[in-house]
Length: 160
Image (cartoon, rainbow, N blue to C red; front, side):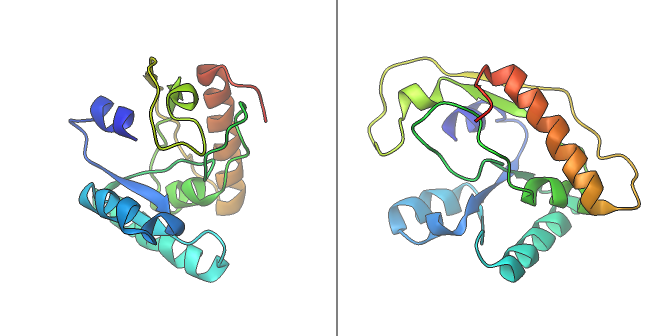
């Protein structure tokens, strides 16, 4: 997250984080200070309402920043993407700008709070337009697949 903040320092964003990170003070407080929005992943109705609010905020100029995998894990490989970011983009009619991180898994492995020495590369790709589609779900699926293909190429991770 710090690598992205440093890279995008001139472009204000609102991090979208899983609701579980808002449960403990040591994760909630720093994330609240950078304007994070917590979303529910397991209650579909609450999660949908969270994403609609994020889409409304995006239309008002508050750019959301999603981690579409939804979590971290130790094993290498790009995990399947959750649909929230892409449904939100279609709902708000906003382009998606893929940001690829390389090296973060080695510096802060899953299950550890102590960073290791290493290098992080951040690549900001060209915007992917949501297009005009009558079926918003199909548009979100197509957008997800297109962005995921871009991320696989940029990260060098295997399809996991």
